Image (cartoon, rainbow, N blue to C red; front, side):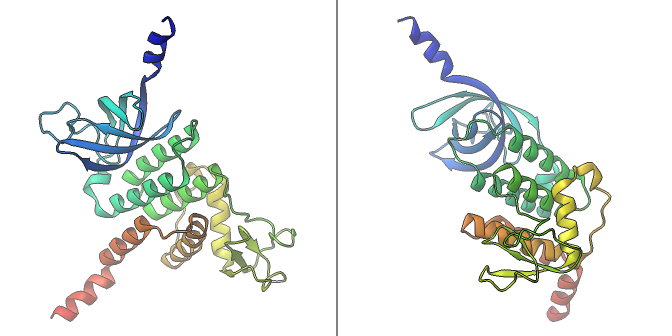
Length: 273
């Protein structure tokens, strides 16, 4: 008898949460996938959240941070109360930044499991990244920094300083990158059936900088378009290999970027004329 009240109390808790995904559920509810710092990734039902008169309306929007009061159910939890903390408005007003946020959220969902309890480092990384996506001029650099740090936090850190099969320290020259080996392969060890791709010295140098440096030391970095494309090629390939699936968020973000590129717009107008 004395344990019952304690058990009931433990089934209800308050937590910060970042909304990764939301779907319509039933006639008036929302099904939310959220990331919390100490209880990991959760699927929650926000009852009545689609009703305009609901107190939760606007507090459980996609790509926002809210404080939730959660009641743990047998299968799905219930978001009993919600209070918006960080709206990250630019992620809702700018299509390109929203697309990058979708890619970031997809990666968090793919690299975490519902049973993971302590994801504070991933939570803080996501929180900082969404904030940077709102105001930093180079959103692609923000995303690359996030990808390398997420790989580090989830145990898939690529080796960028030593040749993976040979073990020797990499010198400053063009190298190769192997998805299967999980890092850099020197020219001497290339061709050993590791499925490697060319890795330019400049690309490797920026990847190392992104991997080891806090954002404050990176925000002034100016990356040319061709180098951005090569960074995206290498990291997207590696992440796709690790997850064994295509990244829908990355594909969408890339399409949005190409549609907004002046050369593409000009080409479309010339064909229309």
